[in-house]
Image (cartoon, rainbow, N blue to C red; front, side, top):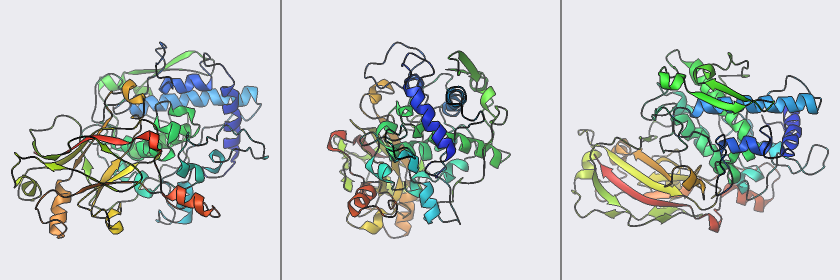
Length: 480
């Protein structure tokens, strides 16, 4: 979906405006529907149907599919019965992972990764203002609002699409398989981690928080995530959804176009075709193979006993500039612990952990993490280079969301064993001391042609607002 005012988007915008006019107490209103995912209030109300979004667990995909189905039905009813529009309207998806001619940096590919034009203009097609699809700063990040594309390395879904199983440690859906909904537990599946979480970070503002459905782009983003789930199932006969009774039998309850409660089990939600809809393509925009050296993330729990090699002594504040995390070697750590973990002749592993990642307000950027890089050498900070190990995002860890949904911010664990081994083999680390850990904001791509120079610079270099205070509570390097 890239056309500025495709007819589907125009009807969508008209319906959004109608829904926004309804009182919050109406289950078919814009605010009620957003509140199902998460309330904006710092003191959530008593409605048990609100604040129910599951993240970091195996219900993430079926819950959001049911959410989309009911929302789409409500919008279609508004379009058909109030606006006298088409009765076959369908919610479009934003294919920000589409690549033309195998080149993610082609003009066409870049255009797909920009926030669609209808969401960047305050005006309707006739030039009148008050476009309900438009949000200004700080409700969206400056880069997204100005049309700078999200970086390909932030949204490439290849690793998720190649996952062999739905559940398990760092697999497609999640390794967390308890039989109840969880809001956030740091154990996101590969698809949820990338592109889902990182795209929320790119759009920023409202999209970084659990009341993210208040941003109209939320629904097109989640249609794309739903499409990638369908594509994962279709791409390989070995790709299967869970068969456990706890997953199949769980009922997800929402409201239909008449405001009545409707329920779907996860079993009901396994096939989009059985639910009455299909996607234009399940083969377009399913990822390109990244460099082999990308580092795997590991699950947050169940680790073997670890020997701490180095850690921070306090929080690490992030900002607009490249930062080297100040790791202090543990006096009791064996000198050979880290080189042993970086040797292919041992079973030891090296794990970099970043805990309590949070911000007070939307930082309007994701961050990239490098190990062994020289912070003053721009060539070392290439996300497709040998020093890059992964991303940090803040989705669900902004302001009061942290307290409502998980308490202590987000946790990220990176298995850097093979990464360190490769650095030694390439002569980029001699095995002595602690290789530097470097964090930098995720720069964006070029803004649309014709953008003013000041706007172009602002879009390309995200600058977290001072009040956002993005930070990492603690960082540790351990071996197992």
